[in-house]
Length: 137
Image (cartoon, rainbow, N blue to C red; front, side):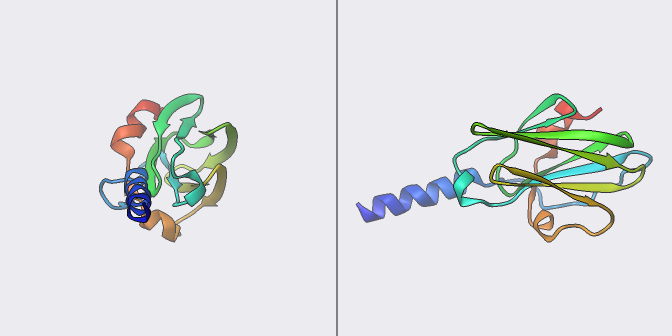
């Protein structure tokens, strides 16, 4: 029984984490880049984290995954719907700059903008091909 429980937990951990290419810094050009990333959180393992950018549903962002949205300079709203919780943040993305939004459990938090890349983002897997095309403006 103990081995079966351990195997089930191990399988859930593997399923709930992102797979894909490692972090790669994007060149924003004249646009800006809005990075949204989800860190590992045991309490949110089996929950979908639906990400919305400026009222456009992008899809589910797996744990330890990130998406890089090329956006026009200015204010953008990112919303997270996870379980029954919903939260949003507004970020003012500068031209040619990068901003960072972190998801942990049901918490969505802006880490600001600049050249310093959060360490947790560097460890995340790129999900941009799955999500960014649906939402970028």
